[in-house]
Image 1: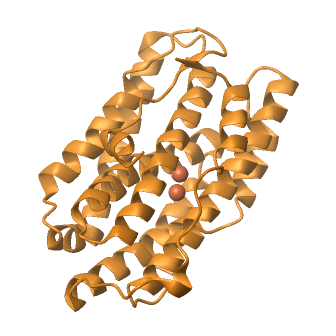
Image 2 (image 1 turned 120 degrees about the vertical axis):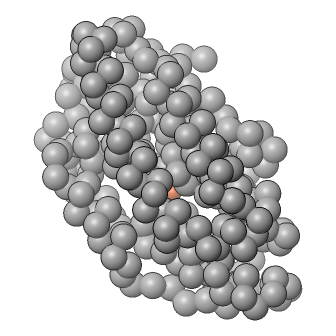
Length: 261
Ligand SMILES: [Fe+2]
Ligand SMILES: [Fe+2]
């Protein structure tokens, strides 16, 4: 299915319908054992920091340099980016509720998040989105695997919701990159793909280092974590648009998305 920037704007406008957050005040207590609850709450609290933020720099980059070949398309893109940021902020609220449900504490700072935020600002919009994308591809693995492995319906539901949203975010960015890459020679696209994969592998190693203990506690080894994340990365990179213009192929839903919906 072909998707345009306009399609993504409609996607974000319609996306919130039909799902509401758990009623955190009235849930039965979590029955996970204390050690696994602690590990999960700490891990989710780190991801929660990454979902916060008003997107000020991203909005500024979009205004200055969207480079999508037309003012009206760029205006639509800017509106879609606002809704994309709002959806990420929804994730922050959901994760804050989930950390509380697990009996954990939210964090205000974490070194990995500080690195992630400063790296994003180095090279303008395209690089900013690339760094975001690596996080979203990894999020597909992290939340998707947790949704299936954690024996708790609330955790499963929230992780399933986030992974569904992230599949849309990845598709949205894919359309943006297709537009940006129009007219590039295959070698340019190949070099871009190479540096993107290197960035992805660095992020993957970092995330496993910080969150591997939590994932292992739920029986998720490094191999399935790598396998699912890299599958998402391959799907993203295997849809090159050699100049097809505005239209693009939607990022396919991941297995957990299908199972969660
Ligand atoms: Fe998110
Ligand atoms: Fe996202």
